[in-house]
Image (cartoon, rainbow, N blue to C red; front, side, top):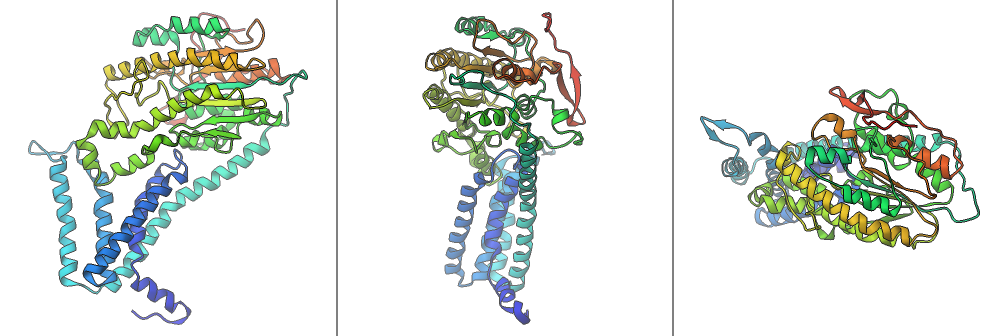
Length: 519
C-alpha cells in the first residue's frame, strides 16, 4: 500500500506496526470500566490496564523471536487476547443451554471448542503467512475505533459529573447555619448501616430480636425512632435525598423514568449538608467502602484500608470475563470469597479506625457508610469471615434460607460492634457529639414496603430529642440544623417512595406505616 504526502510516515507506521496488539489488550478493560463507570473510579482500571498491556507486550516480543516477523507476532498476540478476554462473556449465556438433554454450558465443552477456534487460525497464520501488512492496517484501525468507542461513555460521564458538580456547588444556598455560642461546635457522625431494616421488620421477617441492642442505645442516650422510614428504597436515592435535605423529584426534576442513578452521584458527594458544615469550619472525614463511586474522595480526611492486597471488585469482575473464569468456577467458594474479601477488609478497617476520629483537631463531619448487613454476607455473628453461596451471574441472588442466615449473622455482628464503638465516640468527644445511626433503606424481603422501613437512632445534646417516631431521613439534617445551628429549613412532609417498573426515577408513594402520630 502506498502513502503519499505529509501523512506518508504516519501511514506507513500504522501499516507496519502492530498497534492493535496493545489496543486489543486494552479494550476489554476500558469497555468494562465504561459499563461500570457509575460504580467505580477510572483509577480502578489502571493496574488491570497496565498488566494487560504489559503481558501483551511480552507475548509480542516472545512471538517475534519465534516468528522473526513483527506483524505476524502481532496478529498471533491479538488472537490470543481475543481468546483470553472473550471466553467468560461467551460462557455465561451457554450455562443453561442443553442439546438433546446434554448441558453444553460446561467448561470442558466450551473451553475445548473455543480453544479450537483459536488454534485453527493461529496454525493458518503460521503456515500460510499471508500478506500481513493489510491485516495489520485493518486491525489497527478497527482496534483503535473499539477503544475510542469504549472511552466515549467514560468521557461523557466525567463531563456530565463535572457539570453537575459545578451546578450543585453554585446552586447551594448561602451559609444558612451558625453556631450559637463561643464553644466548639460538636462533631457530627452520620453512620449508615446499609440495608439495616426496622426492628419490627427484623422480628416479623427474620425472627431477629434486637431489643437488647435498642436498650443499649437508649442507655447511652440515643433516641430510637421506632417507626422511621427512608424516603427511597435504594442507596443512591436515599443518601442524596438525606444529605441534600430534599426529595429526588425536586433535586433532579424532569429526568426520564429510566435515567441511570449515576446522575445522583455529584449531588451525593457535593451535598448541601456537607457544604453547609464545611462553610462553618467543619472538616469532612469519610471512610472507603467497596462502592467506590459513593466515596467523597475530595474530603479533608479519607480513611482507606488499601484492601489488604485483595482483588478489587472491578478486578474480580474483569477476571470473570476471561479464561480465568475456568479456575474461578472450579474453585467457586474460594473465588467468591476472594471477590467479597474487600468488603470484609474495608468494614473491619472502618470499625477499627472510627474510635480514632474524635482526637482529630477541630469540628468534624464524619460520614461512615458501612456495607453491612447488606450482602455480600461475609460476617459471622462474632466477626469471623464466612461465605454464603449466591448466584453471581444472576445478580447475586441468594436462596431464602441463605439470605436470612447471612443477614441475621451480619445484624448480630454489627450490633455488637456498635455497642462497643459508640460509647467510645461519646466518651472521647468534647463537646459531646451528634450521632446519626441509620439504615439508608430497609430490606426488600417480605414485601416491597419493607424496603423503606429502617433503623434510625439519634444521639443529640440536651435531655430531650428533637426527633420523633415517624421521622424520615429527608428531615434529619433539617431538624439538626434548625435545632442546634440556628437554621430555618423547616420540616418537609414525611413521604416514602418505591420505584415502578418504568425505572428508578418513576416513583409511587407508600404510606409511613406506624401507629404513633408525627408532630
